[in-house]
Image 1: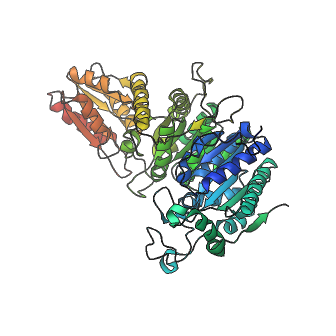
Image 2 (image 1 turned 180 degrees about the vertical axis):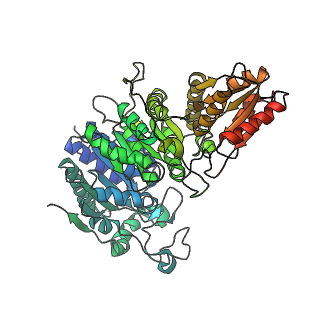
Image 3 (image 1 turned 60 degrees about the horizontal axis):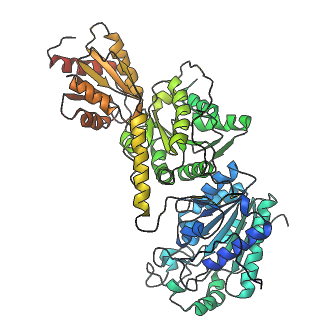
Length: 246
Length: 350
Protein backbone atom coordinates (compact mmCIF):
# COMPACT_ATOMS: atom_id res chain seq x y z
CA UNK A 1 0.00 0.00 0.00
CA UNK A 2 1.34 3.45 -0.80
CA UNK A 3 0.50 6.56 1.10
CA UNK A 4 -1.66 8.86 -0.96
CA UNK A 5 -0.85 11.84 1.18
CA UNK A 6 2.70 11.37 2.37
CA UNK A 7 4.87 13.71 4.40
CA UNK A 8 6.87 16.05 2.14
CA UNK A 9 10.61 15.42 2.12
CA UNK A 10 11.26 18.98 3.26
CA UNK A 11 9.23 18.43 6.43
CA UNK A 12 10.83 16.45 9.23
CA UNK A 13 8.95 13.69 11.03
CA UNK A 14 8.92 15.58 14.33
CA UNK A 15 6.18 16.49 16.80
CA UNK A 16 5.70 20.26 16.81
CA UNK A 17 5.23 22.47 19.86
CA UNK A 18 2.32 24.32 18.26
CA UNK A 19 -1.07 24.55 20.02
CA UNK A 20 -4.06 22.56 18.78
CA UNK A 21 -5.71 24.36 15.86
CA UNK A 22 -2.70 26.60 15.19
CA UNK A 23 -2.04 27.55 11.55
CA UNK A 24 1.76 27.21 11.65
CA UNK A 25 1.66 23.44 11.09
CA UNK A 26 -0.40 23.88 7.92
CA UNK A 27 1.81 26.71 6.68
CA UNK A 28 4.96 24.64 7.33
CA UNK A 29 3.49 21.78 5.35
CA UNK A 30 2.51 24.00 2.43
CA UNK A 31 6.01 25.45 2.40
CA UNK A 32 7.58 21.97 2.46
CA UNK A 33 5.30 20.80 -0.36
CA UNK A 34 6.32 23.74 -2.53
CA UNK A 35 10.03 23.12 -1.83
CA UNK A 36 9.53 19.47 -2.84
CA UNK A 37 7.48 20.29 -5.93
CA UNK A 38 10.06 22.77 -7.20
CA UNK A 39 12.86 20.34 -6.37
CA UNK A 40 14.86 22.99 -4.51
CA UNK A 41 15.25 21.36 -1.07
CA UNK A 42 19.00 20.96 -1.49
CA UNK A 43 19.55 24.58 -2.45
CA UNK A 44 17.16 26.30 -0.07
CA UNK A 45 18.12 28.37 2.95
CA UNK A 46 15.31 29.46 5.25
CA UNK A 47 15.02 32.09 7.94
CA UNK A 48 13.14 31.44 11.16
CA UNK A 49 11.70 34.42 13.05
CA UNK A 50 11.46 35.25 16.72
CA UNK A 51 7.95 34.30 17.73
CA UNK A 52 5.97 31.06 17.83
CA UNK A 53 7.78 29.76 14.73
CA UNK A 54 11.21 30.38 16.26
CA UNK A 55 12.06 26.68 16.09
CA UNK A 56 10.67 26.19 12.56
CA UNK A 57 14.24 25.07 11.86
CA UNK A 58 13.56 21.91 13.85
CA UNK A 59 10.61 21.03 11.60
CA UNK A 60 11.72 21.98 8.10
CA UNK A 61 14.40 19.77 6.58
CA UNK A 62 16.37 22.53 4.87
CA UNK A 63 19.33 24.69 5.96
CA UNK A 64 17.95 27.29 8.36
CA UNK A 65 19.19 30.42 10.05
CA UNK A 66 18.06 32.27 13.13
CA UNK A 67 17.60 36.03 13.08
CA UNK A 68 17.14 38.60 15.84
CA UNK A 69 13.52 39.70 16.26
CA UNK A 70 12.39 41.51 13.11
CA UNK A 71 15.78 41.48 11.39
CA UNK A 72 14.82 38.42 9.36
CA UNK A 73 14.74 40.24 5.97
CA UNK A 74 18.18 41.78 6.66
CA UNK A 75 19.66 38.36 7.44
CA UNK A 76 17.92 36.93 4.36
CA UNK A 77 19.44 39.77 2.30
CA UNK A 78 22.92 38.89 3.57
CA UNK A 79 22.45 35.24 2.66
CA UNK A 80 20.89 35.86 -0.75
CA UNK A 81 23.59 38.36 -1.74
CA UNK A 82 26.27 35.84 -0.77
CA UNK A 83 24.49 32.93 -2.49
CA UNK A 84 22.41 34.38 -5.34
CA UNK A 85 21.73 30.96 -6.89
CA UNK A 86 20.15 29.54 -3.70
CA UNK A 87 16.48 29.82 -2.83
CA UNK A 88 16.09 32.02 0.25
CA UNK A 89 12.87 32.42 2.17
CA UNK A 90 11.98 34.11 5.41
CA UNK A 91 9.14 32.99 7.62
CA UNK A 92 7.84 35.72 9.89
CA UNK A 93 4.97 36.49 12.23
CA UNK A 94 3.10 39.76 12.59
CA UNK A 95 5.09 41.12 15.53
CA UNK A 96 8.37 40.21 13.85
CA UNK A 97 7.47 41.62 10.43
CA UNK A 98 5.02 44.45 11.06
CA UNK A 99 6.20 45.89 14.39
CA UNK A 100 9.84 45.49 15.37
CA UNK A 101 10.98 44.60 11.85
CA UNK A 102 9.06 47.25 9.91
CA UNK A 103 12.18 49.00 8.65
CA UNK A 104 13.84 45.76 7.56
CA UNK A 105 10.84 44.44 5.61
CA UNK A 106 10.12 47.78 3.91
CA UNK A 107 13.70 48.26 2.78
CA UNK A 108 14.17 44.66 1.67
CA UNK A 109 10.98 45.11 -0.38
CA UNK A 110 12.12 48.47 -1.71
CA UNK A 111 15.47 47.02 -2.80
CA UNK A 112 13.54 44.26 -4.53
CA UNK A 113 15.60 41.61 -2.75
CA UNK A 114 15.04 38.40 -4.66
CA UNK A 115 13.63 36.49 -1.69
CA UNK A 116 10.29 34.92 -0.76
CA UNK A 117 8.61 36.06 2.46
CA UNK A 118 5.99 33.94 4.19
CA UNK A 119 4.13 36.23 6.56
CA UNK A 120 1.88 34.57 9.14
CA UNK A 121 -0.72 37.09 10.30
CA UNK A 122 -2.69 35.81 13.28
CA UNK A 123 -3.23 39.28 14.70
CA UNK A 124 -1.69 38.47 18.05
CA UNK A 125 1.67 37.82 19.78
CA UNK A 126 1.52 34.10 20.52
CA UNK A 127 4.97 33.25 21.88
CA UNK A 128 4.80 35.89 24.61
CA UNK A 129 1.25 35.16 25.68
CA UNK A 130 -1.38 36.95 23.62
CA UNK A 131 -0.42 40.62 23.46
CA UNK A 132 -1.68 43.16 20.92
CA UNK A 133 -0.02 42.90 17.50
CA UNK A 134 0.37 45.60 14.85
CA UNK A 135 -2.24 43.62 12.93
CA UNK A 136 -4.76 43.31 15.80
CA UNK A 137 -8.06 44.69 14.44
CA UNK A 138 -9.81 47.63 16.11
CA UNK A 139 -11.65 46.82 19.34
CA UNK A 140 -10.12 43.34 19.66
CA UNK A 141 -9.17 42.41 23.23
CA UNK A 142 -5.69 41.13 24.00
CA UNK A 143 -3.64 41.06 27.20
CA UNK A 144 -2.23 44.50 26.38
CA UNK A 145 -5.47 45.89 24.97
CA UNK A 146 -7.75 44.56 27.74
CA UNK A 147 -10.52 47.04 26.84
CA UNK A 148 -10.16 46.40 23.14
CA UNK A 149 -7.72 47.99 20.69
CA UNK A 150 -8.54 51.67 20.65
CA UNK A 151 -7.78 53.18 17.24
CA UNK A 152 -7.64 56.63 18.88
CA UNK A 153 -4.58 55.65 20.91
CA UNK A 154 -3.28 52.41 19.35
CA UNK A 155 -3.87 53.10 15.67
CA UNK A 156 -5.42 50.67 13.24
CA UNK A 157 -4.24 47.28 12.07
CA UNK A 158 -1.45 47.54 9.48
CA UNK A 159 -2.31 45.99 6.10
CA UNK A 160 1.06 44.63 5.03
CA UNK A 161 0.21 43.05 1.67
CA UNK A 162 -1.30 46.33 0.43
CA UNK A 163 1.54 48.39 1.92
CA UNK A 164 4.32 46.40 0.28
CA UNK A 165 2.49 46.22 -3.05
CA UNK A 166 3.13 49.95 -3.31
CA UNK A 167 6.88 49.53 -3.75
CA UNK A 168 8.10 49.52 -7.35
CA UNK A 169 10.50 46.60 -6.87
CA UNK A 170 7.97 44.28 -5.22
CA UNK A 171 7.04 41.64 -7.78
CA UNK A 172 4.34 39.71 -5.96
CA UNK A 173 2.21 40.59 -2.95
CA UNK A 174 -0.82 38.56 -2.00
CA UNK A 175 -3.04 37.81 1.00
CA UNK A 176 -4.53 34.36 1.53
CA UNK A 177 -5.99 32.49 4.47
CA UNK A 178 -5.99 29.06 6.08
CA UNK A 179 -9.70 29.17 6.95
CA UNK A 180 -10.89 26.33 4.68
CA UNK A 181 -9.49 23.51 2.52
CA UNK A 182 -10.09 25.73 -0.52
CA UNK A 183 -8.20 28.61 1.03
CA UNK A 184 -5.40 26.29 2.16
CA UNK A 185 -4.97 25.10 -1.44
CA UNK A 186 -5.06 28.74 -2.60
CA UNK A 187 -2.34 29.55 -0.06
CA UNK A 188 -0.22 26.66 -1.34
CA UNK A 189 -0.50 28.03 -4.88
CA UNK A 190 0.49 31.51 -3.66
CA UNK A 191 3.53 30.15 -1.81
CA UNK A 192 4.57 28.29 -4.94
CA UNK A 193 4.19 31.43 -7.00
CA UNK A 194 6.28 33.39 -4.50
CA UNK A 195 9.06 30.82 -4.86
CA UNK A 196 8.68 30.76 -8.65
CA UNK A 197 8.98 34.57 -8.64
CA UNK A 198 12.36 34.18 -6.96
CA UNK A 199 13.47 31.40 -9.31
CA UNK A 200 12.55 33.66 -12.24
CA UNK A 201 14.59 36.45 -10.59
CA UNK A 202 11.61 38.79 -10.67
CA UNK A 203 12.32 40.23 -7.23
CA UNK A 204 10.65 40.47 -3.86
CA UNK A 205 7.60 38.30 -3.15
CA UNK A 206 5.41 38.15 -0.07
CA UNK A 207 2.50 35.90 0.88
CA UNK A 208 0.52 37.22 3.83
CA UNK A 209 -1.38 34.30 5.35
CA UNK A 210 -4.32 34.86 7.72
CA UNK A 211 -3.79 32.11 10.24
CA UNK A 212 -5.80 30.96 13.27
CA UNK A 213 -4.60 31.29 16.87
CA UNK A 214 -7.35 29.56 18.87
CA UNK A 215 -5.33 29.80 22.10
CA UNK A 216 -5.06 33.57 22.23
CA UNK A 217 -8.26 34.28 20.37
CA UNK A 218 -9.85 32.21 23.16
CA UNK A 219 -11.86 30.16 20.67
CA UNK A 220 -12.35 26.54 19.67
CA UNK A 221 -10.25 25.74 16.56
CA UNK A 222 -13.34 25.55 14.35
CA UNK A 223 -14.66 28.88 15.61
CA UNK A 224 -11.24 30.41 14.96
CA UNK A 225 -11.45 29.41 11.30
CA UNK A 226 -14.91 30.95 11.09
CA UNK A 227 -13.52 34.08 12.76
CA UNK A 228 -10.99 34.48 9.95
CA UNK A 229 -13.74 34.43 7.31
CA UNK A 230 -16.33 36.47 9.15
CA UNK A 231 -14.27 39.02 11.08
CA UNK A 232 -10.61 39.09 10.08
CA UNK A 233 -11.16 39.40 6.34
CA UNK A 234 -13.17 42.59 6.95
CA UNK A 235 -9.90 44.24 8.02
CA UNK A 236 -7.69 42.09 5.79
CA UNK A 237 -9.36 41.38 2.42
CA UNK A 238 -7.94 38.40 0.54
CA UNK A 239 -6.48 39.05 -2.88
CA UNK A 240 -3.52 39.69 -5.13
CA UNK A 241 -2.23 43.23 -4.64
CA UNK A 242 0.78 43.02 -6.93
CA UNK A 243 1.77 40.61 -9.65
CA UNK A 244 4.40 42.29 -11.76
CA UNK A 245 5.24 41.71 -14.49
CA UNK A 246 2.45 39.18 -15.04
CA UNK B 1 45.96 56.98 2.53
CA UNK B 2 43.64 57.65 5.47
CA UNK B 3 43.16 55.12 8.25
CA UNK B 4 39.59 54.51 7.22
CA UNK B 5 40.56 53.85 3.58
CA UNK B 6 43.37 51.56 4.76
CA UNK B 7 40.91 49.58 6.85
CA UNK B 8 38.53 49.20 3.91
CA UNK B 9 41.28 48.13 1.52
CA UNK B 10 42.70 45.79 4.17
CA UNK B 11 39.33 44.10 4.36
CA UNK B 12 39.14 43.69 0.60
CA UNK B 13 42.65 42.27 0.48
CA UNK B 14 41.61 39.81 3.19
CA UNK B 15 38.92 38.53 0.85
CA UNK B 16 35.96 40.38 2.34
CA UNK B 17 33.39 40.70 -0.43
CA UNK B 18 30.37 41.75 1.63
CA UNK B 19 30.24 45.10 3.32
CA UNK B 20 27.09 46.60 4.82
CA UNK B 21 27.02 50.00 6.49
CA UNK B 22 25.18 53.16 7.35
CA UNK B 23 26.65 56.67 7.23
CA UNK B 24 28.02 58.17 10.43
CA UNK B 25 30.95 60.50 11.02
CA UNK B 26 33.92 59.91 11.43
CA UNK B 27 33.85 56.61 9.50
CA UNK B 28 32.06 57.63 6.27
CA UNK B 29 35.21 57.00 4.26
CA UNK B 30 34.76 53.27 4.89
CA UNK B 31 31.32 52.83 3.24
CA UNK B 32 32.34 55.33 0.53
CA UNK B 33 35.47 53.33 -0.24
CA UNK B 34 33.51 50.08 -0.23
CA UNK B 35 30.81 51.55 -2.51
CA UNK B 36 33.55 52.36 -5.04
CA UNK B 37 35.69 49.29 -4.60
CA UNK B 38 33.30 46.37 -4.10
CA UNK B 39 31.93 46.48 -7.68
CA UNK B 40 35.54 46.36 -8.94
CA UNK B 41 36.22 43.10 -7.12
CA UNK B 42 32.81 41.49 -7.68
CA UNK B 43 31.72 42.15 -4.12
CA UNK B 44 28.54 43.49 -2.55
CA UNK B 45 28.03 46.86 -0.93
CA UNK B 46 24.69 47.83 0.56
CA UNK B 47 23.98 51.12 2.27
CA UNK B 48 21.51 49.69 4.73
CA UNK B 49 18.48 51.39 6.23
CA UNK B 50 20.03 51.28 9.70
CA UNK B 51 22.91 49.93 11.74
CA UNK B 52 20.60 47.16 12.88
CA UNK B 53 20.01 46.05 9.31
CA UNK B 54 23.71 46.37 8.43
CA UNK B 55 24.93 44.11 11.22
CA UNK B 56 22.22 41.56 10.46
CA UNK B 57 23.12 41.54 6.76
CA UNK B 58 26.64 40.73 7.96
CA UNK B 59 25.13 37.93 10.07
CA UNK B 60 23.41 36.54 6.96
CA UNK B 61 26.44 36.64 4.66
CA UNK B 62 28.58 35.15 7.42
CA UNK B 63 26.05 32.34 7.93
CA UNK B 64 26.36 31.67 4.20
CA UNK B 65 30.11 31.19 4.69
CA UNK B 66 31.40 34.52 3.35
CA UNK B 67 33.79 37.02 4.91
CA UNK B 68 31.63 40.01 5.83
CA UNK B 69 32.14 43.32 7.59
CA UNK B 70 30.41 46.40 8.89
CA UNK B 71 31.77 49.59 10.40
CA UNK B 72 30.33 52.50 12.30
CA UNK B 73 31.08 54.99 15.03
CA UNK B 74 30.02 54.97 18.66
CA UNK B 75 26.22 55.67 18.52
CA UNK B 76 25.90 53.28 15.58
CA UNK B 77 27.93 50.62 17.37
CA UNK B 78 25.41 50.74 20.21
CA UNK B 79 22.75 49.72 17.67
CA UNK B 80 24.91 46.89 16.38
CA UNK B 81 25.23 45.26 19.78
CA UNK B 82 22.11 43.16 19.19
CA UNK B 83 23.59 41.54 16.10
CA UNK B 84 27.01 41.14 17.73
CA UNK B 85 25.48 39.23 20.64
CA UNK B 86 23.56 36.99 18.20
CA UNK B 87 26.70 36.32 16.17
CA UNK B 88 28.62 35.48 19.33
CA UNK B 89 25.80 33.10 20.32
CA UNK B 90 25.45 31.61 16.82
CA UNK B 91 29.26 31.37 16.53
CA UNK B 92 29.51 33.36 13.33
CA UNK B 93 32.72 35.06 12.22
CA UNK B 94 32.48 38.74 11.32
CA UNK B 95 34.46 41.95 11.57
CA UNK B 96 32.92 45.03 13.16
CA UNK B 97 34.88 48.28 13.23
CA UNK B 98 34.21 51.14 15.63
CA UNK B 99 35.84 54.44 14.66
CA UNK B 100 35.07 55.98 18.03
CA UNK B 101 33.74 59.49 18.63
CA UNK B 102 32.82 61.30 21.82
CA UNK B 103 29.79 60.28 23.85
CA UNK B 104 27.53 59.59 25.63
CA UNK B 105 24.50 60.07 23.41
CA UNK B 106 25.13 61.84 20.14
CA UNK B 107 28.30 63.29 21.72
CA UNK B 108 30.58 64.90 19.17
CA UNK B 109 32.73 63.78 16.27
CA UNK B 110 36.07 64.13 18.03
CA UNK B 111 38.39 61.22 18.72
CA UNK B 112 37.52 59.25 21.83
CA UNK B 113 38.26 55.97 23.56
CA UNK B 114 35.15 55.94 25.68
CA UNK B 115 33.70 52.78 24.11
CA UNK B 116 36.35 50.56 25.72
CA UNK B 117 33.92 49.07 28.22
CA UNK B 118 31.34 48.45 25.50
CA UNK B 119 33.86 46.68 23.27
CA UNK B 120 35.81 44.78 25.89
CA UNK B 121 33.24 43.95 28.54
CA UNK B 122 30.47 42.66 26.30
CA UNK B 123 28.32 45.45 24.88
CA UNK B 124 25.43 43.20 23.97
CA UNK B 125 23.55 40.82 26.26
CA UNK B 126 24.80 37.46 27.46
CA UNK B 127 28.11 35.93 28.53
CA UNK B 128 30.40 36.44 25.58
CA UNK B 129 33.76 37.90 24.65
CA UNK B 130 35.05 39.56 21.51
CA UNK B 131 38.62 39.73 20.39
CA UNK B 132 39.18 43.52 20.30
CA UNK B 133 42.03 44.90 18.17
CA UNK B 134 43.26 48.46 18.69
CA UNK B 135 45.17 49.91 15.71
CA UNK B 136 47.39 52.94 16.41
CA UNK B 137 48.53 53.77 12.87
CA UNK B 138 47.27 53.70 9.30
CA UNK B 139 49.48 50.65 8.75
CA UNK B 140 47.75 48.84 11.58
CA UNK B 141 44.30 49.89 10.34
CA UNK B 142 45.13 47.74 7.31
CA UNK B 143 47.09 44.95 9.00
CA UNK B 144 44.81 44.41 11.99
CA UNK B 145 41.73 44.39 9.75
CA UNK B 146 43.25 41.57 7.76
CA UNK B 147 44.18 39.79 10.97
CA UNK B 148 40.65 40.32 12.29
CA UNK B 149 39.19 38.22 9.46
CA UNK B 150 41.61 35.37 10.18
CA UNK B 151 40.87 35.45 13.91
CA UNK B 152 37.12 35.59 13.26
CA UNK B 153 37.33 32.50 11.04
CA UNK B 154 39.68 30.68 13.39
CA UNK B 155 37.38 31.05 16.38
CA UNK B 156 34.00 31.35 14.60
CA UNK B 157 33.48 34.58 16.44
CA UNK B 158 32.89 38.27 15.72
CA UNK B 159 36.02 40.38 16.10
CA UNK B 160 35.99 44.11 16.82
CA UNK B 161 38.40 46.74 15.60
CA UNK B 162 38.39 49.59 18.12
CA UNK B 163 39.77 52.66 16.40
CA UNK B 164 38.98 56.36 16.79
CA UNK B 165 38.33 59.52 14.78
CA UNK B 166 42.01 60.47 14.76
CA UNK B 167 43.34 57.12 13.51
CA UNK B 168 40.49 56.90 11.01
CA UNK B 169 40.94 60.36 9.53
CA UNK B 170 44.71 60.83 9.51
CA UNK B 171 46.93 60.08 6.52
CA UNK B 172 50.16 58.10 6.66
CA UNK B 173 52.11 56.06 4.17
CA UNK B 174 51.68 52.32 4.45
CA UNK B 175 53.07 49.15 2.93
CA UNK B 176 50.82 46.44 1.53
CA UNK B 177 51.86 42.88 2.22
CA UNK B 178 50.76 39.92 0.13
CA UNK B 179 47.98 38.13 1.88
CA UNK B 180 46.93 34.50 1.88
CA UNK B 181 44.62 33.07 4.53
CA UNK B 182 46.46 30.80 6.99
CA UNK B 183 46.41 27.20 5.79
CA UNK B 184 45.23 25.92 9.16
CA UNK B 185 41.95 27.85 9.32
CA UNK B 186 39.12 25.42 10.10
CA UNK B 187 36.75 24.55 7.23
CA UNK B 188 33.36 26.26 7.33
CA UNK B 189 31.50 22.99 7.73
CA UNK B 190 28.66 24.82 9.43
CA UNK B 191 27.83 27.29 6.64
CA UNK B 192 24.31 27.41 5.20
CA UNK B 193 24.60 26.63 1.52
CA UNK B 194 21.64 24.30 0.98
CA UNK B 195 21.49 20.72 2.25
CA UNK B 196 22.84 19.09 -0.91
CA UNK B 197 24.08 15.56 -0.19
CA UNK B 198 24.41 16.24 3.53
CA UNK B 199 22.12 16.66 6.55
CA UNK B 200 20.63 20.11 6.96
CA UNK B 201 22.44 22.68 9.07
CA UNK B 202 21.02 25.19 11.53
CA UNK B 203 22.63 28.43 12.67
CA UNK B 204 21.09 29.29 16.02
CA UNK B 205 21.65 30.77 19.45
CA UNK B 206 18.31 29.67 20.87
CA UNK B 207 18.13 26.52 23.00
CA UNK B 208 14.73 25.74 24.43
CA UNK B 209 15.38 22.66 26.53
CA UNK B 210 16.87 22.68 30.04
CA UNK B 211 20.62 22.22 30.16
CA UNK B 212 21.18 22.84 26.43
CA UNK B 213 21.97 26.51 26.79
CA UNK B 214 24.30 25.96 29.73
CA UNK B 215 26.17 23.33 27.74
CA UNK B 216 26.40 25.74 24.78
CA UNK B 217 27.71 28.49 27.07
CA UNK B 218 30.31 26.20 28.65
CA UNK B 219 31.57 25.42 25.16
CA UNK B 220 31.71 29.14 24.33
CA UNK B 221 33.63 29.86 27.54
CA UNK B 222 36.19 27.17 26.63
CA UNK B 223 36.65 28.93 23.30
CA UNK B 224 37.13 32.30 25.03
CA UNK B 225 39.71 30.65 27.30
CA UNK B 226 41.59 29.45 24.20
CA UNK B 227 41.55 33.01 22.81
CA UNK B 228 42.86 34.32 26.13
CA UNK B 229 45.70 31.82 25.98
CA UNK B 230 46.74 32.32 22.36
CA UNK B 231 45.83 35.79 21.15
CA UNK B 232 47.29 38.36 23.54
CA UNK B 233 49.22 40.94 21.52
CA UNK B 234 51.10 44.01 22.70
CA UNK B 235 54.11 46.17 21.92
CA UNK B 236 56.72 47.34 24.42
CA UNK B 237 59.09 50.29 24.15
CA UNK B 238 61.81 50.79 26.75
CA UNK B 239 59.96 48.76 29.34
CA UNK B 240 62.93 46.82 30.73
CA UNK B 241 64.66 49.82 32.32
CA UNK B 242 61.57 51.90 33.03
CA UNK B 243 60.46 52.97 36.50
CA UNK B 244 57.04 53.99 35.21
CA UNK B 245 55.33 52.16 32.37
CA UNK B 246 52.67 54.06 30.44
CA UNK B 247 49.84 51.78 29.32
CA UNK B 248 48.05 53.27 26.32
CA UNK B 249 46.47 52.09 23.06
CA UNK B 250 45.35 53.69 19.80
CA UNK B 251 45.61 57.49 19.56
CA UNK B 252 46.75 57.84 23.16
CA UNK B 253 49.59 55.39 22.49
CA UNK B 254 50.92 57.61 19.70
CA UNK B 255 51.30 60.46 22.17
CA UNK B 256 52.79 58.14 24.79
CA UNK B 257 55.27 56.78 22.27
CA UNK B 258 56.36 60.34 21.46
CA UNK B 259 56.92 60.96 25.16
CA UNK B 260 58.90 57.77 25.69
CA UNK B 261 61.11 58.32 22.63
CA UNK B 262 61.73 61.94 23.62
CA UNK B 263 62.93 60.76 27.04
CA UNK B 264 64.68 57.64 25.83
CA UNK B 265 68.00 58.81 27.27
CA UNK B 266 66.81 58.87 30.85
CA UNK B 267 65.08 55.54 30.30
CA UNK B 268 62.77 56.11 33.24
CA UNK B 269 59.54 55.91 31.25
CA UNK B 270 58.43 53.01 29.07
CA UNK B 271 55.35 52.14 27.04
CA UNK B 272 53.25 49.02 27.01
CA UNK B 273 50.79 49.28 24.14
CA UNK B 274 48.05 46.63 24.13
CA UNK B 275 47.22 45.67 20.53
CA UNK B 276 44.52 43.31 21.76
CA UNK B 277 42.33 45.00 24.37
CA UNK B 278 40.68 41.65 24.84
CA UNK B 279 42.39 39.37 25.56
CA UNK B 280 44.27 41.93 27.66
CA UNK B 281 48.04 41.63 28.36
CA UNK B 282 47.28 41.15 32.04
CA UNK B 283 49.99 38.54 32.67
CA UNK B 284 52.71 40.84 31.34
CA UNK B 285 51.43 43.79 33.38
CA UNK B 286 51.34 41.62 36.52
CA UNK B 287 54.88 40.48 35.81
CA UNK B 288 56.10 44.08 35.45
CA UNK B 289 54.23 45.09 38.62
CA UNK B 290 56.05 42.25 40.36
CA UNK B 291 59.33 43.81 39.23
CA UNK B 292 58.31 46.96 41.09
CA UNK B 293 57.35 49.15 38.16
CA UNK B 294 54.53 51.69 38.50
CA UNK B 295 51.98 52.30 35.76
CA UNK B 296 50.47 55.36 34.18
CA UNK B 297 47.31 54.58 32.23
CA UNK B 298 46.67 57.18 29.53
CA UNK B 299 43.43 57.03 27.60
CA UNK B 300 40.76 59.28 26.07
CA UNK B 301 38.10 58.26 28.56
CA UNK B 302 37.37 58.82 32.24
CA UNK B 303 39.35 55.70 33.08
CA UNK B 304 38.09 52.50 31.49
CA UNK B 305 41.18 50.48 30.57
CA UNK B 306 42.44 51.78 33.92
CA UNK B 307 40.23 49.19 35.63
CA UNK B 308 41.81 46.32 33.70
CA UNK B 309 45.31 47.53 34.53
CA UNK B 310 44.37 47.72 38.21
CA UNK B 311 42.91 44.20 38.03
CA UNK B 312 46.17 42.97 36.50
CA UNK B 313 48.39 44.79 39.01
CA UNK B 314 46.36 43.52 41.98
CA UNK B 315 47.74 46.22 44.27
CA UNK B 316 51.39 45.23 43.69
CA UNK B 317 52.38 48.72 42.58
CA UNK B 318 50.98 52.18 41.90
CA UNK B 319 48.60 52.82 39.02
CA UNK B 320 48.23 56.48 38.01
CA UNK B 321 45.81 57.87 35.44
CA UNK B 322 45.81 60.58 32.84
CA UNK B 323 42.73 61.00 30.66
CA UNK B 324 40.90 63.50 28.49
CA UNK B 325 37.21 63.06 27.86
CA UNK B 326 34.36 64.12 25.60
CA UNK B 327 36.25 63.97 22.32
CA UNK B 328 39.33 65.82 23.62
CA UNK B 329 42.73 64.30 22.85
CA UNK B 330 45.59 63.66 25.27
CA UNK B 331 48.62 65.95 24.98
CA UNK B 332 52.28 65.13 25.40
CA UNK B 333 52.76 68.09 27.81
CA UNK B 334 50.06 66.94 30.21
CA UNK B 335 51.15 63.32 29.97
CA UNK B 336 54.74 64.33 30.72
CA UNK B 337 53.70 66.27 33.84
CA UNK B 338 51.78 63.26 35.08
CA UNK B 339 54.71 60.92 34.39
CA UNK B 340 57.12 63.28 36.16
CA UNK B 341 54.79 63.41 39.15
CA UNK B 342 54.84 59.62 39.34
CA UNK B 343 58.60 59.46 38.95
CA UNK B 344 59.06 62.10 41.63
CA UNK B 345 57.04 60.04 44.07
CA UNK B 346 59.61 57.27 43.50
CA UNK B 347 62.46 59.73 44.08
CA UNK B 348 63.41 59.77 40.39
CA UNK B 349 64.09 63.10 38.67
CA UNK B 350 63.47 62.97 34.97
